[in-house]
Amino acid sequence: MSEPTAPVAGLGAADVSEPARAALFGPGRRATTVGLVLLTLVTAFEAMGVGTAMPAVIADLSAVSAYGWPFTAFLAASVLGTVLGGRWCDVAGPRAALLVTPLVFAAGLVVAGTAGTMAQLLIGRVLQGGSAGTQFVAVYVAIAAVYPERSRPALFGLISAAWVLPSLIGPPVAALVTEQFSWHWVFLGLVPFVVVALALVVPGVRRLRRSGPPAGTGRGLVAAAAGAALGVTAVSWAGQHPDRIGGITAVAALAVLVPALRRLLPAGVFHGGRGIPTVVAARGLIAGVFFAGNSYLPLILTATHGWSLTAAGVPLVVAALGWAAASAWQGRHPDLPRTTLLRVGFGALAVGVAGLLAVTPAAGPAWVAVPAWTVAGVGMGLGYSAVSYLLLHHSQVHQVGSHTAAAQVADQLTTATLVGLGGALLAVLATPATALTVLLVPLVVLAVLGALLAPRAG
Image (cartoon, rainbow, N blue to C red; front, side, top):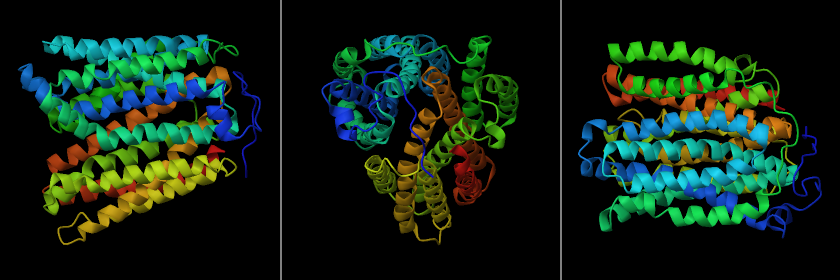
């Protein structure tokens, strides 16, 4: 099957016959394309690099006991910003959000980069997280309004590359900056790039407008957004503390999350309703499975097979390259059915995770991790881009914000839950090999489930 083309509103978006390269880099959109990719690049670099610098940050601020709080603050603010940003963009269009969020993000970088206390650092992280969440939604709304449907796969390929590049160079660059200069410049050094990205985006987005009434009402949205932020953060924390307190926290998180998700996610997500419900579910499944595996693969290789940290990072690097290559490839084939690519992506992800089951035993061939995780990365490049395309394809312009927010919340919640499950298994089972074998089995099952559900996303 092939998805029909739906008209969208924006700057020349109705010209669906326009070649993808001209649609992205023609005179009317070149600066907007570069600006959106650069905004994504800066946000991704901050996300990938801060973890490397954080030990130095915490030591300098004499706050070792609060090590997890900068990450928790960013996550909670990001969920809140995602949900409220979705409503904002649906009501007012993406223009204001794309003009305001880079400024708030830059302010967060300055506040964190000049921090002399943990309190100031946390304020900076909240500003960064909230603006990053809203900006993510605004970028999708702008894509729906500005770019022809046929050119979107190519743009999603560029945006994927904007996430992959920082995953390769972010940690070493952040380490170099921290060692040679100061951790402060891991934050402050990004501010000029935000300014450049904003200058490029402004000419393109200033003409955008809202293209219809917002989807639904905003009643209860703030409470649901706060519940989702607290719930996702609590799930993440409980996974790192598999004791009685962690169990109580997990139960409390569910009590908050369930009503919040009923408000924030489209009806039908949990039983595979056709269209948007399955697209949102697919986003949660594909992100959760991949990032959970990605989080624990280095531990498998170091704890079970004695690899160095550098060597254990090789499968992650080649998976990132596979993701970028597959995403670029699908961008050059806009006529391929996206539901087929989504199904193939989930299938490749299932094969890659299943391959790691051969690696977890001490007697297993550790080298299999490299080709297996490369296959998983290719699956992400195909599947994640397909989900992004289908999300916009099924949405009217005035629904893109809420649908994107729902997909992002599903992504964050599933990832936090599966990563937390891995942490709990490591704490209660005898060896890392046993714990991670137990974790990989449901990951394979979830990837297969995603492949089975993929046709319902069309």
